[in-house]
Amino acid sequence: LSRILVSLDRHARARPDAPLATIELSSSGGDLIEGLKAGYLFSEFDVATVIRKGDVCLSACALAFLGGTSSHTPPARSPSCSLEIGGTLGFHNFAASTDALRRKLGSEDGLTSERQGFHMARAGAALLMQYAADMGIDQGFVAQLLSRATESFDYLTTARAFLALRVCPIGLGRP
Image (cartoon, rainbow, N blue to C red; front, side):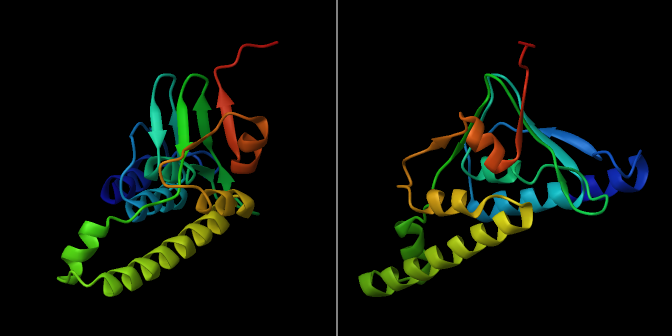
């Protein structure tokens, strides 16, 4: 993705105040770190993000979505994250696999695994908070996200949530 964006930036940048590209996202999620990396790439290269009607963007996909940017024209980053009515955007607290942790440590020692899990959770929370700050996302949203059970999703459905996350609803008819 990075190589593609570098190439586009070199050869196709039309206007400094417009997005380099728009990416449509649809995924049930994945790795927290990879989702944050994608979001940072979208922000760095001014890539707008959109979720279309009928598509689902959850977990790491939802975090990457929040990196959508139209430009970095001063004074600040201009977010560009659009959710088409009928699309689904859902957030939940991240999870770490204890089995993967045990394999990584090469140990069945419960106390060692517990300590490692605590350190991973603390690091993950810090990464989420830094990402939110970098993207201009309401810190209260992150606090609420971290307090949820990993199985419990928070879907973007209210005007307050759209405003807190700076997401633009699209596909609405005029009243």
